[in-house]
Image (cartoon, rainbow, N blue to C red; front, top):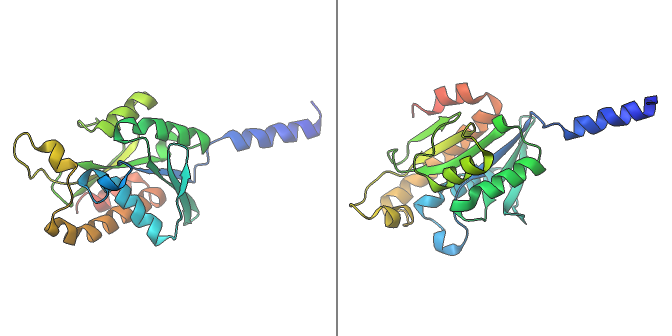
Length: 207
């Protein structure tokens, strides 16, 4: 192979390699106005908070709404899947492949019944905890070794009312506190991408 061919091969290989400074931030939720302002869509709301901060316009792209911004030399790609919650993995895999995202640079944001309202927990991996969005992502990716940010929605419902609660609108009191929760969650996402998941966990999991 001549020198020009070697140079072309080198740059082609570099283009195909994942960019370690690029992160895919996936907020889980359901598309459609019926699901706006519901507890199950808090992942969407965290991503929207980030988008508003950095003046991001979402594009109606394949399997989801997509936008991106740069922060401290990192590229944060924001994704809100439009596949509905139970098929979230399809959108995640598509954009991980298309944007060449390292598996360790994937962060999924979701609601969690098992956490007190307003508490957040960042983890490098873990079980789906009964969450249908995570179940599908695990199934499609073939593993659960990706970061997730759980946002607590509490479990203030009577027996048999779980679905209604999760898909229900925020209460007046929850609505008052929500902006601070979304802001803290957004800061946690930025910390994950800049100071690393270990330090971000130490900083935000205590709150």
